[in-house]
Image (tube, rainbow, N blue to C red; front, side, top):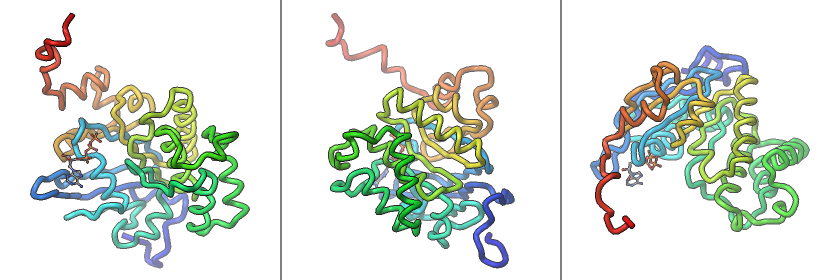
Length: 266
Ligand SMILES: Nc1ncnc2c1ncn2[C@@H]1O[C@H](COP(=O)(O)OP(=O)(O)OP(=O)(O)O)[C@@H](O)[C@H]1O
């Protein structure tokens, strides 16, 4: 639903969910990777999406942000339909997809300048924001001359986060933002995300690190086999245990760790 005038909701308008996924469904060759999944993220929420390998998290998030067309279902950002009004939705959203393809022959600064200009920011604004983002994410000094081609995986995550933040979105959708990021940089990233939420932004992130989700997020959804099996405030979902214990109880069914691989025994 959009406002009567068709204009984007004003920055402080919290009458819509920040992110609303309705019955999103995707099959690959008859295999349902995501099965009519629902999510609702309230404005100002720090929302964690967890699930075992292959649960469907990346497929769900990539449909939700407009990168992969769903077979069925809807995705809305502050009431704006991602598939019907992609440009308006993208103004409101900053996205860090999994395995982001980047222009490899650019430096980090060139990438930010290029994307900033593409998104309609004036040159001075782009330069000022790029300066700040590169400094905060420790991508300055010698790194400034490094092409993205030669970036490490963690550096790619950081420049990816910078591109997601550059246009000042209200919602961040981040697929495994902490993967391969060193502990010092992780503290910096957490600080940035916490500040973003404290100033009224909303964050949805997927992660395999339960301690991190427990530490950062107020709400969590657990996905398994293409479905959201539990969703709620982290404290409620944990129910007195650690999130990791709850997660393993909900989706863990492996016992093979103690048997087999006998050739590894000394
Ligand atoms: N393009 C594709 N073609 C065929 N199958 C796919 C494709 N993309 C995803 N899948 C399948 O869909 C399922 C969900 O994959 P997805 O990457 O969404 O899971 P995930 O929860 O993000 O996993 P992980 O935690 O390992 O990153 C998997 O079985 C995967 O093999």
